[in-house]
Amino acid sequence: MESSGDNLTWSQTVVLSQLGKHGAMTTADLARSESVKPQSMSATLAALEEQRLVERQTHPSDGRQILFALTKSGVAVRSARSRLKRQWLSSAVAQLTPSELRALFGAVETMKRLANS
Image 1 (cartoon, rainbow, N blue to C red):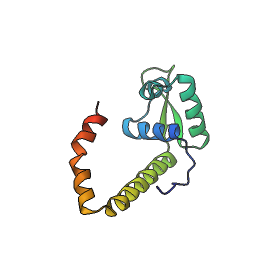
Image 2: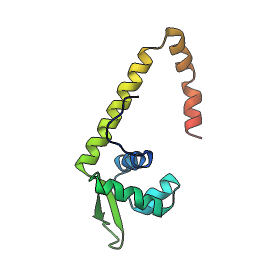
Image 3: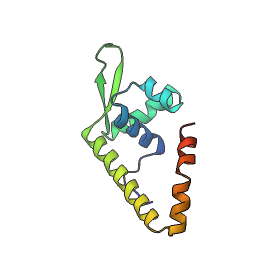
Image 4: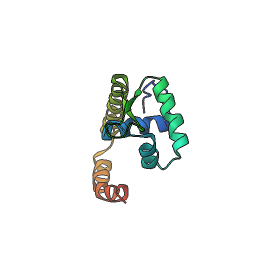
């Protein structure tokens, strides 16, 4: 797959994805969603904040909590990564033979079931 050139770690990429899908979240919520310790998530968020891809926001109902949200740059990086993944997948699928395509499409339901388990 073509590199996006942004040098993000897997953990950072996952956090951008979570924030893009679910909106602003606390460190604890992000840590729970990825089954990591809050301290590890704090380090990931600090790196993303340093790159100006996420920003802190005050919690609307609990002033003691901090929410993290994507910045405009974070949204742009997430969009670029998604675009590159779609382009790679489209190119890879275009190289398959008709027989390989049938096999792939035949396995879709099984893969969905596995992904949702």
